[in-house]
Each structure stands twice: as C-alpha cells, then as structure tokens.
Image (cartoon, rainbow, N blue to C red):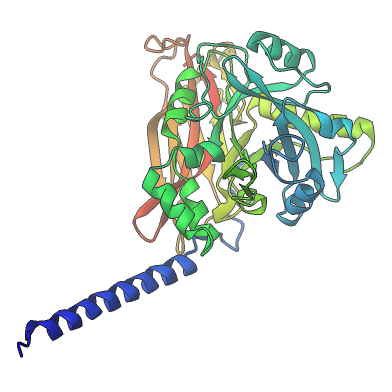
Length: 431
C-alpha cells in the first residue's frame, strides 16, 4: 500500500497555520477590547489666560422621533444630562414641533431647545434660535426668515457625499459645521468603515475614535471663505439619527445616541452662566445668549471623546504705547486702523491644562489657514511683528483682514496624531 510521507507534515502545517490565525485573531480581539485613548489633564490649574469665561459645552444637531431619528426627545435629554452637557439643541427636519409641544427649558443643569434643519435647493441649512417653524424652500427666503427671527443660520455637512452643500458662493450664513459626525464616517476609507462595523460590538470606543479624523476639505473652505469684517463660525455637530435602514421594515439603532453624544462638543465662551430658570423670559434670554455666541464665533469645538478640555484659552494681545495690553479672544475683531498709536506687534497666547508627561500635545497657530507657529508640550506665547505700520497690508487681498486660530493635536501611542481641538478665529485688519 502506498503511503504519502508528506501528508502528516501537510496536516501538521495546516493545523499550525489555523492555530496561528486563531492566536492572531485573539490578539486583535484583546487589543480592540482594551483599546482606550484618554487625555491626562494636570491636577494643578496651569491656566495663564488673561480673560475669564464660563466654558459651557453643548450637543448640537441631532434627530429624534419628530423626524427621522429613533429616540424620543425626553429620553435624549436624560442621556445628555447623564453625560454632563450644559446645553442640548435638536434639529429635526423641517419642523419645530418639539418647541410647540412645550419641551424646551431646563432639566436640572441641562438647557434644551429646538432648532430646525431646513431643506433648501442648495442643501440642508441649520436654523438655531428661531421662534417659528420655517418651511423648506428657496435659500434666500429661508435665510431671510431666520434673520427676521434673530436666529442664526449654519450650513450643514458641506462635503457630505450623501447630501452635500451645492453652492458655496452664497452669502449671509453665519457659520458652517466643520465637524459633522455623519460626514466624518461617510468620508472614511471603506476599509475603515468595515473595521468600524466589525469592531463596534467589541468596543464602541475603538470604532468611534475613527470619527476623530481631520475634515481637510471643510477646513480649507472655512479658512478661505473668511470675509473682511465678517466672522464665519465653525461648530461641531452630532447629526445623530441612530436609525440605520437595513430594509423596508428593519432598522438598526446604530450608533447609539449615548455614544455619539460623547464624541464631539461645541464649547461656548460666555461672560455669564445660564439662568437655570424655567420662565419664558429667562429661556428666551439664555437661548439668545447661545445664538449670539455662535453668531460671533465665541466658541471652540473638540473631540470630547478623549476628555473634556480643561483650561483651554486662545487670545491675541495688543498694546498701544505706554498703555496696558488689551486682550481679544475668538470671535473678536481688532481694527488696527482705529488705533492712533502705532502697534508694532501682536502677541498670541494659547494653552490647555494637559499633563504633557502623560499626554504629548502640540498647539498650532494658524494665519489664514497656514501654520504660523507651533509649540510642543507647553503654552504658546508668540510675538508677531507687524511689517506694515501704515495700516493696510498690500499683500492681503481681503482689505487688510487676517484670521488667526489655533488647533491642538494630541499624540497617541507615541506616533499617531489626532487634532483634538479647534478654536474659532480672531480677526485682525489694518496690519
């Protein structure tokens, strides 16, 4: 009888390969299961800013059962309270019914009110702070109605391949969504999307941390669209639905609201706290406080998934001759032409209370979208010398307007950078 001497070795080799694959899959499973990124903040308060604000964080733009979301507003308010948000703004499609149903107001320390996501011929438009529902329709009419109601209009998910904004030459809006979590995952490489789906049940944090990638197209547009004496605000939006349609009758609640509500926040820099009172006049006043801050750009946004920002500040300081330095923050406009005494330099300051011994980070100062200065693991203090003391920069085609903002990158696992935080701009013209 013929006996194949190679067969036992083949069987043994096959088993070893299978065993190696199993061990590899187990190692990958453990790595995914235990994966965590946490920014370590200093126990000591290292704040060195010159202006004090109340930093209030909020969850903006999500959908409920009032439109195409799966969650009831009342339940989502409970989630936001548990996650320690200061304010919560829904934006159901083409309806303001949560407001009409009397849900707006305070829920202990959480302030909730309803916005509206409105369909226009150019795409979806976010209306915050409006009193009455606005019908879908022509962009100019929608914008005019928002302004009539003293609300704020924001372009939604500008580069979302599913529902992009189609006309970037329009004017009149106050801001755009730089971070939109729906766009973040739709913009990922298909392999990453597959990885997210495969790992979501093992460790949702691992899956969701991929959303913290840099929206380069949106940032490029934002930096380029700034107008003279006009601040364009950037915000982070959740755009949560938790309602993925698998078939005509089957839907999956993915990702969960609680998880998406934890990923990104918009932080307002206010000179007073909310009233916390549930009467109509105080609710209106606090709503206006949020709307004014967003209109002005007195805010920043960050991936709070990795930790709530502690002690962040960004300032520009100028000093006239023989006078104390005056400080400006995101949303402020500095008009050097109105200052009689010549300003020879602008000082920029930025910092955050991160423990650099445990979390490496960088602060990058941008001018008109280009890197101007970078520091690692320390506060940023940068003196920018003005070349043209006669007012009006000949090389600036925006009438002398320049825009300065900062980003903060964190370094994870010693090599991978994630842009954790984005400030809004300080506008300076007459340099």
